[in-house]
Length: 490
Image (cartoon, rainbow, N blue to C red; front, side, top):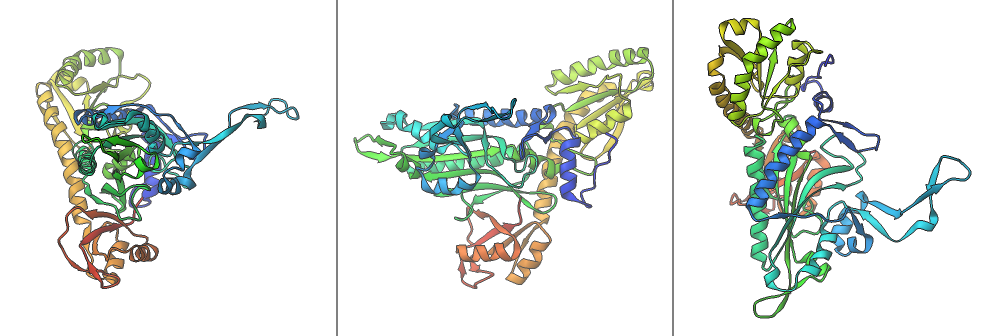
């Protein structure tokens, strides 16, 4: 912990990369582009996973698991999906290695083990799932199917960054089948609202919701709904997507059902997902120059108690003093860690838990025992105060709620302050250089969208669900249906 964290204002990218490692969240692995998620980082992911899993099950979804490998012919069945992911695919061609007779101890591919059909390591699971659904669905009585899986996927990224973009990452992917178009559309909207609720109320990050443009939507989807958040450097981050797939995959895999009148029709579908990219959003939304700042609802432990002692007897006395407090904290439903390590000094512990973003820190020394007090510190504001030990539980209850609320309000205020309206293209180009969301009129064409992207590196992040603000496109002067959110993004 002796290395000092780079300031965000000096080099935001370097600050992020250093913080992921220094906060003990993850590190690069020996496999290029892949990461090792360390216990502290994985504990945060488990919290994310747990809360989302509860929400999925509350809305009638069930978990299942499908294979990691997808036969190439299945992957190719839905052409737009296959084309969209082709450049990111890892492909298995052989199933066995053998000893190299010319180089003892070395292994080479056994050419006799070539697969009859190549296997794609899943970049997403629509193909294998919809081939399975063909066996499960015959009648309207078999619908809807509301499944989710927690899994890993592989997308062979060339430029990687821990949590934000890695060759392999963890995620959940929901895949649902419905009897009607409206039912599938309702499901798509239900999930994006569920994601928005989770990111705002549990992660403390403000988001905007809406539609992706045709060029930005999921390959194989009719429509993609999204939530977008704004990081502290002014770049946007896609935090979650929900896709209305129409009947595209059902037609590709010939998945039909008999309705109540006995007529055959193709099934309507959705898919949706969030990934460990949310960890990146958490870091970049709340982190400061001292390290990570965690919302209490997602912190592996919400309170850390650090004893300040010089002898084993002092540690024993402090332990006896804080044990009732620890008991009261746990009975109140909060998580607490008593850091009584003998091999590290209090200053090291303060710094370590601060950089890890623990919401509340309590320090207790011999003087506190005499005066029946303790020192309590809140990570989000870096402020501390002394209080009577008898008031500790009441104060903790207040702080847990207030820190969660403060982080969200801070995120919301940041987004509001950094969302500007462009009156014309010159205005747009100037605003986009300063970062943040820029609301502007767009004529709805891919040509204009591509021109803006080429000249400014900004993309359409989100088309609001409802926009009655008619006007003229900032580039072409043609009629616009409404304003859309532009930003440079991760």
